[in-house]
Length: 67
Image (cartoon, rainbow, N blue to C red; front, side, top):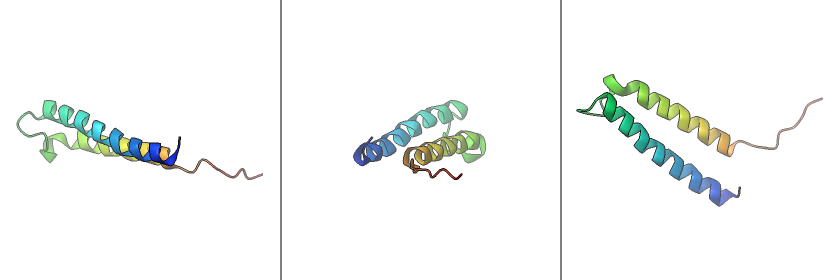
């Protein structure tokens, strides 16, 4: 995967994930999906997943093997 494809993927996957998370948070707290006290676990899980995805997408694939 080239650098431009990685950047496009790094933008669109979190945006799509945000809308999925927003829907789940809305189901958890229908009056206000951004109510931190009722939906904090949804947003924290979203941040963990997005950070892990970005890390794995941009990690250095050239690892040195130590003997």
